[in-house]
Image 1 (cartoon, one colour):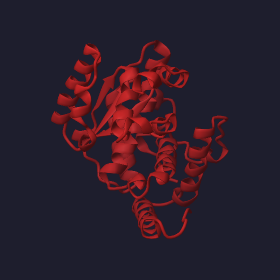
Image 2 (image 1 turned 30 degrees about the vertical axis):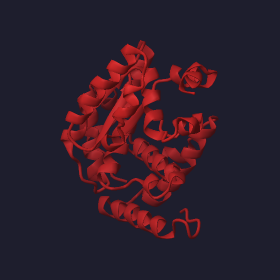
Image 3 (image 1 turned 120 degrees about the vertical axis):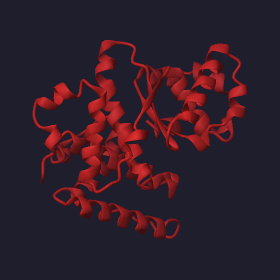
Image 4 (image 1 turned 180 degrees about the vertical axis):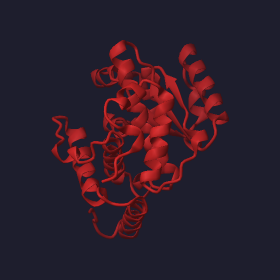
Amino acid sequence: MLDKFVQSKGFKDVSKELSGSIIKKKSLNTALIRKIEDNRTRKEYEQFYKMVNKAPGEVVVILTKPSNNRERKKVNDFLIHEYIHLLLIQNNIEFKNIGAEQWVLDEGLVIFMEYYIHGDSRKIMQAKSEDKYTSICLDYAKKWAKILNNKKPKERKRIILNFYRKIKEKHGKEHLCF
Amino acid sequence: MKKLKLLKGKKIQKRRKSLNDTKKDIKELAKQFGLKFYPESFIFYLFRKENLLCMNIFQDAVNLDTIVLGNLLKHD
C-alpha cells in the first residue's frame, strides 16, 4: 500500500513542493521503522528518531531539505509557519486536539499570525488563493483577523483561550464557529 | 495596531536571511499575543522530501490501508 502510494502521481506532485511538519515525540512508532525495507531510508529514520528523542520539549519541527535556490529562499517562510504551530502547541492551543475536523482553526490562526509577523495583518482581508486548501485556510485566517486585530496582547490570548474552551464544550453537541 | 519593533520595512527582508532571527520574531510574536515562549525548543531538523511525507503517514496512520492524500495535506 505504502509503495503504491509513493509511486502515485499524487505523491509525486506533493513531494515536489517544499513542506514542513510538527512531530510529537509520543507519536513516533519505532515498530513501523523496523518494517522499512530500504536501508538508506530506515537509517535516516533511525537517526532522526534518536535526534528527536534528545531534543528538548515534546514537539519537534521538521522541514524538507531545499533542493535549489528558489526553495532555499522559501525555507524561512515554512519555518515561521511551523514555529507558530509550535508556539501555539506549547501554550496548549491546538484545536485539532478537540476534534480532527477543527484543523482549519489551527491553520487559520497560524496564517493570521504569519501575516501579523510580517506586519501585514490588515492586508489579510484582501488575500485570495485559487488553491482550494489555501483558500479555506485563508477564510479562517480572516475570521481570526476580525476578532484579534486591534487588540492588546493579553486580550488576544484571552479571546483565543475563551474560543478554545467554547469549541471544546460544544464539541460533539453542536457546531460552533466564530 | 501596534507594529512589531523588530519587523519594520525593508530591514526585515535582510534580517530574514538569518534563521536565528526567525526565533527572535517568534519571541516578539509571542509577546504580542500574550503567549509563553520557550526558546530552547525552537529548533528544527531537515529531512529528505520523500521521507518527510512518509513521516506524516507514519504519524497519522494507525492502519496503513486508511491512508489518503487528504490526511497528508492537512499537515502541511
